[in-house]
Amino acid sequence: MANVPLYSITKPYLAAAALLSFDPELRLGSVIPELPSVLAPLVLRDVLAHRSGLDDYAAWPEYHAAVEAREAAWPESRILERLTVTRPALRDDPAAFSYSNAGYRLVRMALEAHHGVGIDGVLDRLVLKPLDLGLGHFLRPGDWDAVTGTHVDGRLRAYDPRWVYHGSLLGDPAEAARGIALLLSGTLGPELPRLMLEARPVHTPGHPLQPAAYGLGLMVGGTPNVAGHGGGGPGFELFAAAAPDGSRWAGHFRRVPDGARGTSEDSETTTTEATPATKHNAEAVTVGDASATARTAEAQASAGESAAPESNGRTDGDPIPRVLSELGERGETVHDPPPATTGL
Image (cartoon, helix red, strand yellow):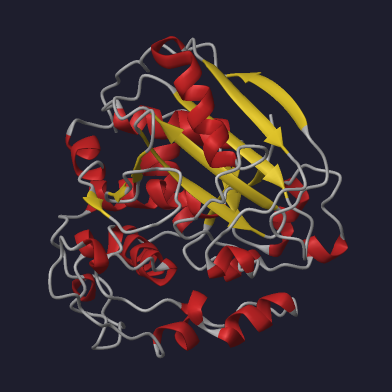
């Protein structure tokens, strides 16, 4: 199995942990007392759905310059003190969707404050261990040692994972997709998939998941209809998705040389099998070509996190169309439904 930074594929897992811990109408300031006054009224549901009107550091040129220069990540306070909020007039308006990595940093802060441990401990206890997932964490510079791939050179290793302020999981995108399928099948309770699939339309011209919508931590749409998330940062572009009922899943990634977003070094296909207890096959494909894929500003700048990505429509190498193709071609026969458990 591959072992790569999953970047923003971590967001569904953060959302799941938050929804297992809090009421969706929670005001974040009630559990994070140190939040600036402009951020304290933000509601968890809106933050998870990217509809809070919160600014994002991904739009700051100096952020991208610092990442490109391989500086150490800034202190959290430097991010928090500069963030602004422009509340949308209507929560359900497609135009109200404004992707914010910073919002998921606030979710991480809420979880850590509430549970009294770091985000790795929170995700392990609430989500990863209950689902028996083979995923680790990519949170510190030393975590590059666990990343597989011959293209992981000195410059790539110089990237500080702490720039991913909400934190990143580490592992195979197919295993992350299996985890999404387990969440959607109700393994941790029936309320979780209902909330995570609470999707509202978003305006994302050119995105492969059309008609596109975003729920609480999940992008929903496409043909066939899937729910999942993309990720992109130094070295890798990824996508993991599952059928909304959790009956099938697929995850793909491609390697991206540093400084050449949208291209990749090589192409290979690997098939891996999940744990015997689940009796499912989890397929992982490392894809590569020399095509360009339109991405959001953050992914383009190798900022280490992924926003809702756009596509140039090509399927040779782009993880999103490849996932859709795999799920569409094999339909209901890809995987049996994951087994239900008693949750936590």
